[in-house]
Image (cartoon, rainbow over all chains, first blue to last red; front, side, top):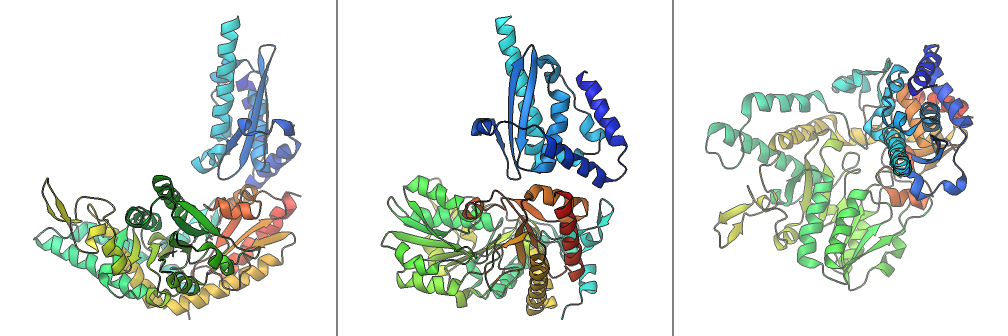
Length: 143
Length: 405
């Protein structure tokens, strides 16, 4: 599935929730089930530090696609990470760089885009795109 | 006695709804809401009286200057300073502490000197001193606190030596709520002729402050935490200290005469009030003080103590909730963690219910490190809060506890 197809799938999944609490319970579920980053990789190098929560993110380049792994100490943040990973992981670097993430607003999770919580989401997206950019440069160099 | 139903009518924002729920504002230690009279003052001043102060000979300038100086007098009375010239308007507590750290530091601190802070300071009473230490080659020493959140002033003697130049300590902790024994600290410091700066950001809104009784050399607090506007604060300094210190910033109101060869400075307090002061907000600060006086400071204190007592009791009854800060003397705030649920998770769900609390490092990372935590949840109260609001907070914490189980 493409980035946009995955985003549309999430929007559809969220459309069944009429109450905010259901959305958050779903995020908590996703957060609890997130396949997280190895403990040994939870280093400062992979850390996005903020005053609210900590997020670790790592990426590897396999067969022309990027696979992301991430973790956070906050469960709702982990739920959001889970959504981001499902959209961005296993995509080609150029598709990640060019991705326009509309699912956050369309699912009504836009309060998570506020600057205070930005380390939970905005910084995470930025970091994901930076990884894609780096892998893209490497790829072009060796192609 | 405070009639909370009537009091709440004075604060327009309290009728706001958040995500369809009535706002429950429990983030008063970060900033308090403003009463109608303060809001109206700002509006009216810009409409009817705005003119730059101190220099103009025209009607509006004189009117504004008079009101500005009246506000200074109101603040003098509020903290019982001896002289009006000891009250300096700043941008806030941070601005006040930076003024002292820079100006006092310039005059009195040199390489090898020491500054004593406490382990429970918020960043604004740490970083200005660190900057000073970096410039001068001085170092910081720390008064620790115990696990109940009580300052170990029994260790103060061992920290003081001939290199100690100043002690800077908070009157009340913004995380633990602990009210520190300032009088005792000052008395001890003065035995060694060491001046004391008191960070009053959290105490001034909740306690009686008498700088002459405390005998502190500097006292700092912010307008916006005490029902006044943002961007205005106070530095109280004993005249004999302020006289010896060089100006912090140059320009505007702080000069007496200027030539390219030499500039002489204005008398106190203007020596420390460079540029065009935030006179509109200073005047509104005076109105906030009037409002507090009319409501009755003791009434406010009594009311907030009841809220603190009720909140502590109700929160303690929640299974798995741990309160940080168990001193007998506290200002009206409670910091806590619910089981092992992350503070951000708790805060986000409370937000969705219209409950505003603070989460995160609470601008006091070293304090949190003491408990091995990266964040906490803080509910902080003002006299317009109600027992019902505390009940709603607790009901929602119970629900959150189940949600994350």
